[in-house]
Image 1 (cartoon, rainbow, N blue to C red):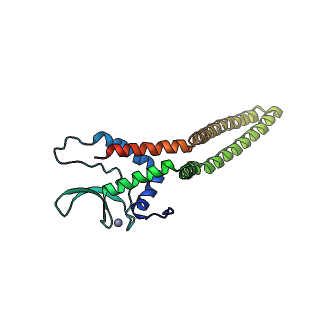
Image 2: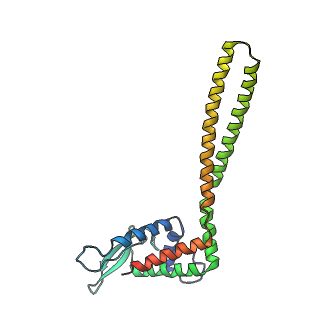
Image 3: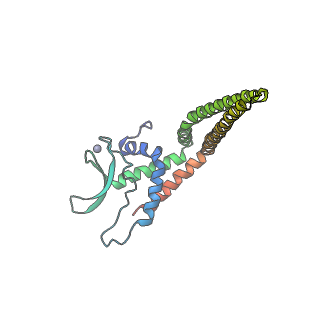
Length: 221
Ligand SMILES: [Zn+2]
């Protein structure tokens, strides 16, 4: 991070939390918060700390929580406080930094492309495991079918009734195994199909950023 040459400050502390999976949770949180603000409280102005636990402390990396504090002149202000070293940052400073960064991102096609690629890379992390699983299941299935073929040949050439029922039992077992394997294969294949559909494009990422920004704006007191 900090590649743009601007002063690192809070943005650097805040940004990693926003680009990873937690971005989604942030949106969820923003949506949940939106409905319950300015409630019954007769007390003074409320602040929605939408970034609680998402912001990391610049000094020690600890997670920060929102809280209100009293300033030198006795006025109340809102801030995020590190759970580890107790450092405080003004809430508006953090939130404005996020807004600015979102604005920048949404307007920069190169950044959007990178974010899109990274999102897709994360989505695809499970693919190799699934593909190995499919290959393994297909191999087992092939073996079961080959074994069934051999047993069928045996069955045809057999005269003894006793031997025949034994082979028939084995064939039944193989039939069951084959059904289980088919079922397993179908499940992994569906998982893989879902992964294919989950691929995002830069327009989607831009829309998601816009949504976060919009919600954020709506929360400002
Ligand atoms: Zn700290």
